[in-house]
Image (tube, rainbow, N blue to C red; front, top):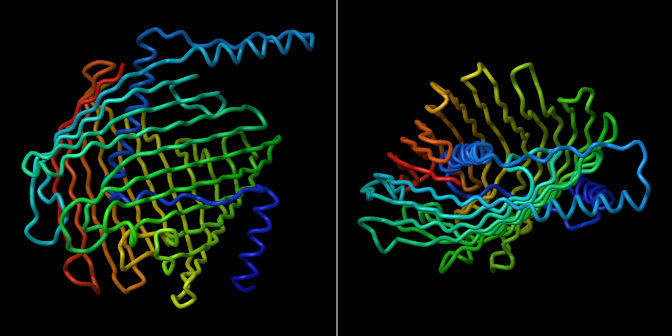
Length: 447
């Protein structure tokens, strides 16, 4: 079957099932090690918020006793009261995080790396309707407003303020479930992630939209997803690196037990640079997966899926990228105190480099969380990745992370961390190589 036939068939299926513009957002183009460390901290933030809520004695909503028979008018009245109660019982959680880093190569350059001491402070407010701990069977709305200030001691001209805002909501239980998230943030990346060997930082605006609807009946169900991400770089890099990526997904699953699903998934995605004046890098792709999600063994849960991906470039000159694809994301509860994490993926991804718009990425991450005491914990992580670009460039990236965390109070945490990252580039100039050491001390306060 030809590419055009496959593309047409995929579009027809998605249109009939979803009947909306379709897309699936690409991962943010931050460095892989920064994303992993940020994920660890976000997990700890959610846990601490839940603990703080319990400590403050916030009353949990009790299930409404079911009656044998309810008159229609009475039922509508009770539903209206439940909705009013849900919307008026908002919980406000102020938070403040601050971090001091010593970075020996702030621009990630191959030689003559410049060091600096950096302070990152982020105050914010979370407004939560429903439970602070996300559950698939809970109605929940969250608004998060924050401001991140990044201050450089020696390179003070790099100091910036980065506002961020997000709205997330989930509704439904039983057969129908709906999830939506809209986020906006100002961020930055090293300019060497755009043009090799170039110092400095580059600002960009990021907008993300996520929509997901699930319908389940007994042991069967479908899931429809839509994701969109807009990366708009500032200044001279706007034309060559800004892009929009969208993807729509359709998943059908069978759930023989209450905790395990077997599924088949199809994705159609589009990457567009055209509105930024660089349409030659535009591409579209189709992915197909089969896999398992949920409880894999007694102590292991997560997702494992494998399949194939086909990407076609709109300039009709560049060679198409067809490759097998996979994703694994597992968590193993080894003991009451120790948890192991295993993540990995393979597939073609969008790149911010102006000369290399797409890469074939293969990576894995092995992590561990261990609680020495209820207050003292340790996070360890190691990652390895291979990035192959269409230009022939091949990068190998090694990352190691260590983080020690201590909870002084339910609302006060501190952590001490170290991160090492190295990139070894082959079939390319030495401008892509770098080594980077970061020592950090952080604290977080959540009320």
